[in-house]
Length: 122
Image (cartoon, rainbow, N blue to C red; front, side, top):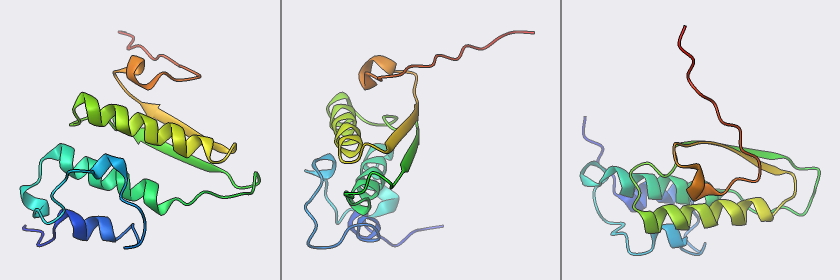
């Protein structure tokens, strides 16, 4: 089915009009129809929405956990780096925040704790 929305329409579900434009979507044509956008463009809009929806808090009693499964999929190296910086910034805004991230590219993410899982044949 056709989704008669633009990238900007989807972003507006998360982001207030007066909120700053996240770097991750700089240069995107937000008037582009959702159905004609690439996987990377859709990924950038959805992830930007996630970070604009989450506002920094001042309470260390708040706990937030972000689960990301291959968030850099469909993104070029520049946008993967921008996303990594956004995740680092999000983490630095509150000491109670954590990220669990599944990736095949751990060297890009530079995790502070790395758990490697390997397939085991029976």
